[in-house]
Length: 168
Image (tube, rainbow, N blue to C red; front, side, top):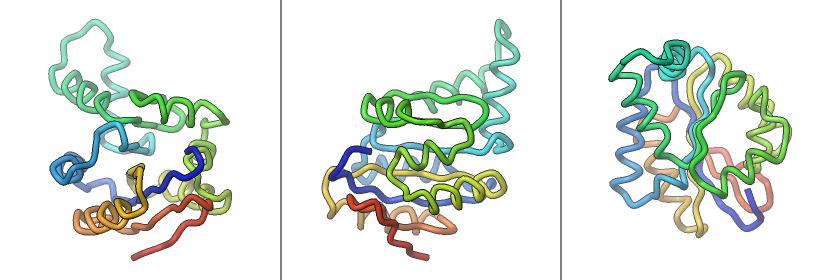
């Protein structure tokens, strides 16, 4: 993201209730457009999206509702499949580099190269990464607490110096 952007992130297992996590973030004042979700291709949500795209022209209310929900957020990225980007900030950021494997997208969001590779590998086997962009540094602490409280297996902060500050 652009310089002077602060963010919190959380890594969730496949079976995490991401809709509840998102509801919590929204209820606590975070804007939908400030949230980026990265899902591996084998995540249950990604599977529904894939089935929906393969069944163009058929009626599937569950898939349509899920895609409508995903398209409300700043960005949803499924490496090797596709993405939804609503936020201009995320659009400019995610379109700047190679995002095919997910590591490029993470680097574009401001994760240092080593961390981007680690999270890219983790996402292929683990679950989902939620990234909450914050306008002010103070907001990141609140986002971090919410991510932890909603079951993130790993949560941390990304500061404007491109450093990841880990937190269990």
